[in-house]
Image (cartoon, rainbow, N blue to C red; front, top):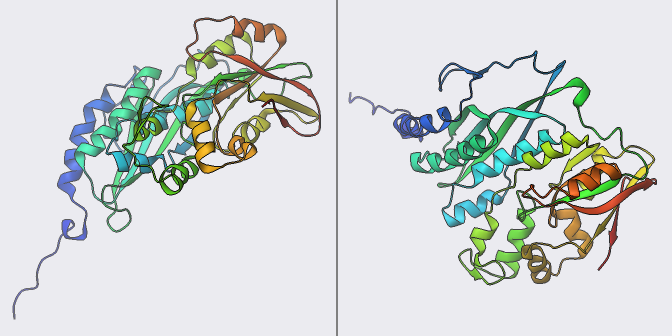
Length: 347
């Protein structure tokens, strides 16, 4: 009786040799981000991090997780995988920083149908570059090869971040009062939200190609769509030094769907929109897709990636701060009202 054919893991679509090669490529990238607080070496079963509890009074850990959404589809179309990692790190940083937290460490998850060590290296380079810039550690992660789950050349990403803040320094908007000023900080484009609508407009409606050179952008459509999410960490640190009352990271849902999270009951943030400089990608999408203005502000950040609420004195100080890369502008005020956010369309 003939012997049965032997099967192994690789015949099922999981190549342990490719996994090992990918690990070798990313090991030094992650290790380069390790701060003095990281304990142990890369590749352990768990990432260990020690921080000085005496340096922060009654410390509280703030955590968040997120993904990049269908912006990944642009990476697949262009073959550019070096920016989406930075997208994820910066998005996660902004989410916890608006709570007052200083980021400590980051972990990633990559799921793919077939491991491509070179592609994984490019993704992790994005993680590591953003972590190094922020001074946080890429303390660990998981790369999963899942055949029959993703198309060849495609993947999904998730990021997990932990930061720390003193219990008396959490920023949640509870101190916001009538007469406070609403300050906006510009975005650099879509960041990581609204890409399903953007892809529908550019690729389905307008029938544009990802490599189309767009005069308004001064680069290709794909390059514009892959501009990384901006990290507002330095701007937020400046706001914290002034005693900012509340901050909102403007992501999916736009200003109305994010600023409402920090406005106390009985108050309303009256935000003027339409008179600020808006990145050309938004006006171009609106024109090509025939999208109503209200829908644009509901789906996209529309050029404002961070909103802060301050007293008039604090607002004057931040508006006069010429050192910030993202230049602040006054966009509204706090008044009494029943709706947490009201957009006032000036054009």
